[in-house]
Structure formats: C-alpha cells, structure tokens
Length: 629
Image 1: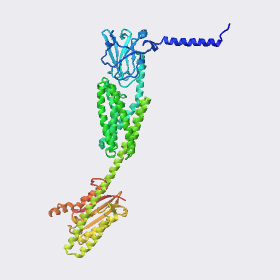
Image 2: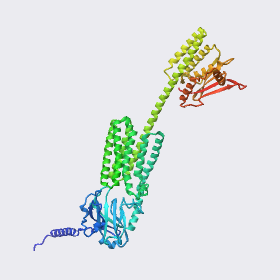
Image 3: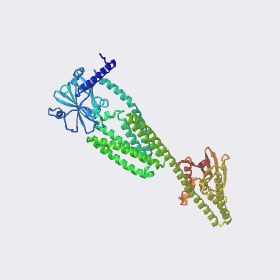
C-alpha cells in the first residue's frame, strides 16, 4: 500500500482550514445594521442604515408610514456629504436591549453634524430633540456636547429603533465611515469631565494670545487718539477682529452671548474671517501710503476692499437663508482670492519698493499665511495663533519704525522752518538798523555838521560792510557781534555829540571766538536805551553792556541810568507817538526760537532801577542766549 507523504497530508489539512475559514467569513458577514463592529459593557458601536434626500419637508411620520417608499441602505453606498443633503439614519438596537436595560439613560454620539434631530417615542407620540452645533444651548456647554445627546431607552421607537435626521452644513465628511456610538450616561459624564479639562488646557494658548492682542490693541488705540493716523485706526480694527475670532471660545463668549442663537454665532465667526482680511488690507493701504507711493496698488486695494465688504453682506444673507452650499463655495473662493492678491501684492511691493516698510508687510503676511497652512495640514490651531502672534509683533515693529521716521522728518522740517523764521527775522532786523542809521546821517547833514556826517558815514559804511559779510550766516561769533555792537554805539555817540558814555564788558571765561549768536541780537535794546532812556535825561548819561558766562548760556545785560520806562512812555504820549519798537519784538521772537519756546518771561527780563528816594534811575535788560559752539 502506497502511503501519502506526511508533508502532503499537512498541506491538505492547511488548505482545508483556510477555505473553511474564508467560507465562514462570507457566511457571517453582516447583512444589516444589526451587526456591530464592537460591543462592550459600557458602550455600543453600531453601523446605521441611511436614507439620503434633499426634501426638507420630509417628516418622521413620512419615514415611519407603512406605505413609505423610503429605502435605507448601508453607509458604504454613500460618499462625501453635501450641505444640501439630509440624512435619515435608522439604528436597530434589538440585539442590545438587554445591555441597554442595565442603565435607563445613555448618551448618543452621532458624529459631527451641525443640524441634528433625535426622534423619541413617548405616550403622546413621537417628538423631536434638537442637538448639534446649531441647536440652542441647554444646561451644559454646547462646546462639550455639540454632537452628543442623552436618550432614554424607554423612548426607542417600536421598542427597538432609533431614528435621526442629520445635516452636515459647514464642511464635508465621508458618510461611508459613519458610525453611531452609545455610551452609558455615567461613563459619558466622567468622560465629559476629562474633555472639559482638556478643553481648558487647550484654551491656554488662545488666552495668552488674546492677552497679547488686548495689550497691542490698547497701544494702537492710544496712538490713534494722539496722532489721528488712519493706519492705527485700521490696525485697531484688525486686532479687534482677531480678538473676536480667536478669543470668543476661550472667554466663553460663544455660549454666554450666542447660546440661544448659535446660527448668529456661526455667522459672526465666518464673517470675521473676512473682516480680518478687510481690516488688514486697509491697514496695509495707509501703512504703506499706497495712494502716494504705489498708486496702481492703491486702486487694486480699493477694489478688494469693496469686494470684501460686499462678500460679508452677501455671505451673511446666504447663511441666514440656509444656503450653506453656496456659502462654502464663496468662503473657498474668498480664500483663493485673498491668497492670490496677497502673493501678487507682495511681489509687486518687493519689485516697486520705495521704503523699508514693505518688508514689514511682506514678513508679517508670510508669518500669518504660514500659520494658516500649518493649521490646515497639521490640524492644530496653535500654529495659527503662533503665526498671528509673529505677524502682530512684526506689524507693531513696523508702526514703531514708521512713527520714528515721521518724528524725525517732522523734526527736520521744524528745524528748517525755524531757520527760515530766523532768517526772516534777521532780514527784518537789518533794514530796521539801516533805516535808523540813515536817519542819523540825515540829521547831521541838516545840522550842517558835514565833518561829523562824513565821519559817521565812514563808520556806517564799515558797519554795513560787516553786516553784509555776515548776511549769509544765521549766526556770527560773539566777537563779531561785540565789534558790531561797539561800532553801532560809537556811531550813536558821534551822532549825539557824545551826550552819553558807554562801557562794554566781556567775561574772560567766554570763548568769544567760538561761541555763536544771531547777528544784531542785542542792538535793538542798546538802541532803545540810548534813544528813549539816555537822550531825554538831563545830566550825565551812562550805558553799560556786559556779556557774562551763565552756566550753559550767555547772560547779556544792557543797563542805562536814563529816565526809566514810565517817564519815557509819558513823553512819547505827550508827543503823540504810539509806535512800539519793531526791533524789540523781533529780538523777543528770535531769542524764544533759540530756546525752542514760544515765549518765556525768564528769557528776557526788564527791570526798572530806582534810587534811594524810589525815583526812576534807569532800566536793566537781561537776555539769556543759549551757547552755540
């Protein structure tokens, strides 16, 4: 007898076991939703039967009617969801009634559907229970139970079925993987506690980010109030939009403000995404001064701003009228539109760059975009927060950089204006002096004092030459000013036949050759002392002019022993003279400009000198002149 080899027998047995196993797999393959992927004592995972329709008027009574032609099928026959689709789901729990009876209340997890309804059978009939993101908030936070709802086993329809009406409005999902999970209420509540703690931990980055935004927002608003610059205004709007968009959930605003109107919360959430882009676009417009520096880009920005504004209005209306399919298309179109505009705008700015401000916009925008892409692909919102934080930091630096440039430019312009004002005042000063000198020469000629007139004219010509030589300079050395002043006093002494004596003193600590002061700054006060103080005086008349070192300033003192200001005013009134010295007012303005002040009584002090009988004994004028070496 020929025996089969042992290894051949073993191979046959292996084939038999393999084919038997495959046959059993096919035989016990689930034919309906009553088969489960897994069952334990705390939860049940079931595969529902699904009917898809677009008829919003279809009711649960239509579904349950004996003549209903509704055909429920396995989820495997469905693909991606669409916002216009309505999914009716039926779960047969007859195989799990014994397990469900061990606890009266369970929690249903139906997946992420914004518009969801569970139908319950009570003695009075079948009633709906709304849940999901768009359902008004009940006792618990919606953020914890968006897609979960408690149900009582006694409320199963026909004692075995659970019916659901579901819509996925705000995104798409793969319906072929749809599963229903039932969890004991006690287990679900414990899990919710853990979920709540994880949510709190997850909110920490958003809370930190919100704190950062609030600080920068206050700074931006303060800067706008002080400077009235539009880039600060739109930057404030931009920061506020970010704060609302990212901070509403960490601060619980979605539940506390919109718990009963979740559709409004969703609408605000969606439109603030667009508002962020709108405020950013307007901020970039004024930050870069596009109207002046980039006129072509400015026209495009104006169009983009109008488009985004219209988009917010139209998209809000679409959400309100339940046109979520069009809304999702518009949101995607808006994202592509802004991405294209951002890329092309960045390239244009880099090519046409007129200032370093461009780099702040490009780097900040790149940071935000990088965070958005990382969030999209890695499904972690913290990347978005990080990208936005970097963007805010860069934009804030950019505003500081621009403000510094504006301040420096304003300081430069102010300095130029000051120089022009000083030149104008000096230009008024020189004709004033020349007019008075020519009047003195005319006076001598009328008196037929030809020798004195020629001598005066010679000195005047010399003094005029000094003035003309210095006319192209805003300042002269203290030595040149003293020489000019001495020539002038000699001219006046010659003109009035030596009716007064004078003395010029200079502090030896003053570097008269290197210290600079405006030309003819002291002369009007000397002239005033001579004409109105000394000449009307009977008896010896003395004039004293001194320059002393006074810390970081030069103290010039003009003192006379004349009739005093009150008597001089009385004499001018008696002669009908009301003219005020133009030269003195010009000097006051020039000295104030030197000190960087509009006016200050400490800069020029005029003191009336009195004798022992308290009678007028002269006038002292003290002028503080800043040192300019």
